[in-house]
Length: 306
Image 1 (cartoon, rainbow, N blue to C red):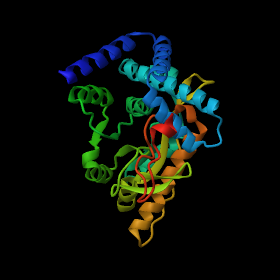
Image 2: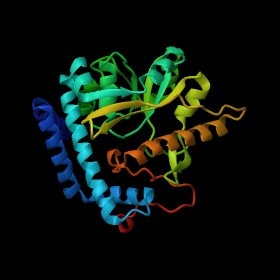
Image 3: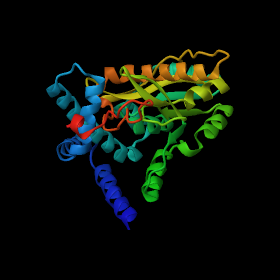
Image 4: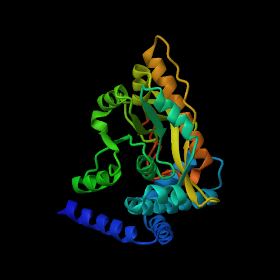
């Protein structure tokens, strides 16, 4: 019953926002984000603590302003997700998204060993893979199954409308290896908290963060290209830009564990650079530094987050 209630609530929001003009839907999404910022003390505390970790010298009032903008951006992203099944290729190109560095992606795909797109919960991550597939470049998406199977099916049906494929985290390594053997593209969100042994500790905003090492291990084994790809909102152009960076140069020595550690640190550093350039567009609501190295105290406490 709970799953059905959740499903009908979410599907109603998707239907309502999806029927509105895009500008109105985005405005309503921003308003919903502001409302969530006001009402959800728990998420606000987590976001405030994350910003304190990442930007310790930033004034408290500036952190609060940035966090509210992040909530609003999340609401606008939600609106885009509700709208995107209506998008055609021509509409998306003219009104929603433009490319920057597309040739980096095309060159990597042409090499034939597969492409691993390093990305994260920055900008409009759901919209990026959807429109990329809409414009003729379907890809695999590594995700965690939603607890509600009805919502999981709803979201995945939207994601895969134009040829994208789902790779679940519970079959992460095998799915990536098979995809690279076929020369496919897979996008991987690399900015979530992990636990050992799937994760290794590398610096992220100057603080050790447990980060998935699977991307580094698969890239080393297959020779697949790794390049950053983020869909970021451009305020001046009033549209998103899907930015593909240059192919990353990975370390490959006789020590696979050191290579995994070194290259995962590289991925974290590149992700951090994109977040620093667009801090209001990152999902600060996730407890990124929850897992701590042995012997270190937790960073998330009610006292520190208030």
